[in-house]
Length: 108
Ligand SMILES: [Zn+2]
Image (cartoon, rainbow, N blue to C red; front, side, top):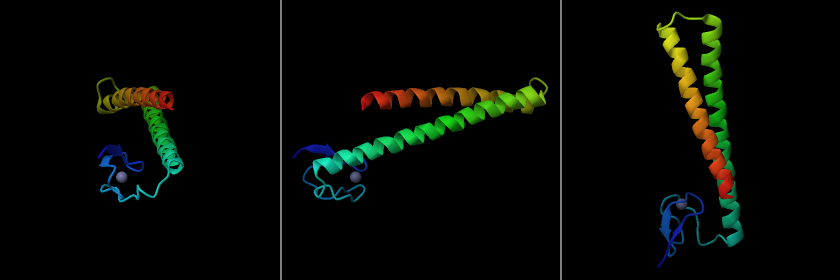
């Protein structure tokens, strides 16, 4: 008995299972080509998700930046803290997503 990872949900399952106990995907009915196809689709979906996240992060960053620039809230006021936090969070979140995307692309 060997442990393999389910091509659909990536959880570890025994190769004796005909059906994945986690997602009920029919593991036994898949041939290698279908497995690779599924893995490819999963990776693209993942990349797409991180891509969306990085756009969202960029949006938050720019939102905070423009608020600070155009509204010019009093330093250390609630609005000022909100803008600064948005810039900080957006920037860090964006960078994290870019790093993950680069690592995902390197894996192939
Ligand atoms: Zn599964």
